[in-house]
Length: 121
Image 1: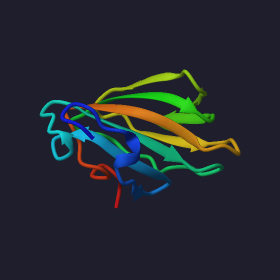
Image 2 (image 1 turned 90 degrees about the vertical axis):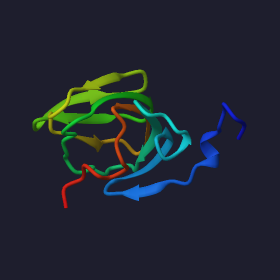
Image 3 (image 1 turned 135 degrees about the vertical axis):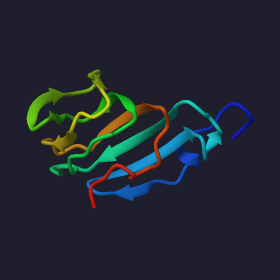
């Protein structure tokens, strides 16, 4: 890690329901960003992460590896490497890994969000 760069391997993953999550850059992480956060998430093969809503955040997701479905308000849309996804504030969504390969994706939230704070308890 330097003043301006960090490698994904330098960040410990947090286990959230149905996925591993690495918040790499954010208000409480490297960079101390005030308006956005960035990270990577891993969704195990044949698992469905729980649906959730971000009340205040917009989210952008980019699929790096694996394939499956993202559900918006219960309706599935296929995703695969290269798929870019925009999730507006207040839209219920979840990811279903239909493949035997891990889905790896990167995400950006604005404003920033605390890891897992949006998961239903």
